[in-house]
Image (cartoon, rainbow, N blue to C red; front, side, top):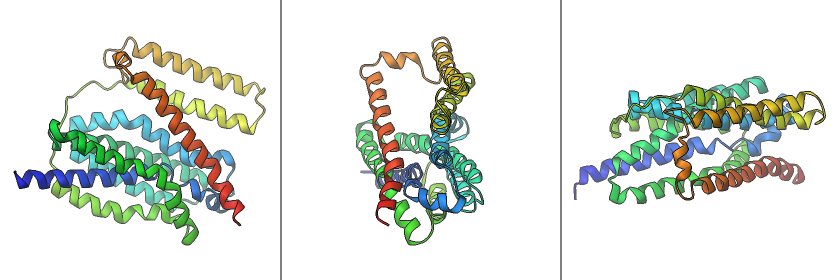
Length: 294
């Protein structure tokens, strides 16, 4: 057994899994701190929703951009750059003087996470040969999967024991540990330079903003208001435009051939329902339970 390769693989798994857990944790870490954030900024319910939505939308929409940058510029380089962006935006979150500033900083956090996550998977896939890659990815997925479940508990404990800003300050020492270790222990690699589907990213990005904005605004104003049907029609038009585009684009962000694979569509629907229920429940339930215990 080549001990040097085994050690390198162990470092790759440990660093990528820890980084992935850290960025995934922040997807729901604000859930239990919402009441504290609301008191600090006198924020509305819609503004509180965007403290979570801004992170998750930026994260989801920029994943293909992060993957493309890693293929072109080097996966380790983009992985480290993503950690730095994540740390700097965490500082911006902790130092926010208004809820709008916090929302913008959360979006930047999501952008940093979108650089880290695909690079973590790519680095791990390169480090492990095909015969043992499945086991490594299973460990990686198990560790990452703990983050959304533990995020509200960790965020609540920190915000109640110290202050809600520390749910962001705590990211700084973690990144300061990860960055030098990543530079020293991870190997650089590149991927195939595929064309980036800018049009597809813009269409699905606009839809992903328009759809939740319509739902959030519907809670604040009358659903029969003229503004609501217009925004809903815009979201549907963007979605249809995206479907039309990916069916004809040569390098679509979501290749239609994937849906020919058995179980792909069903898996997407299942994941949508699972995470939709998880995020909506934790967002609504956690502040209610905190209020009920006081």
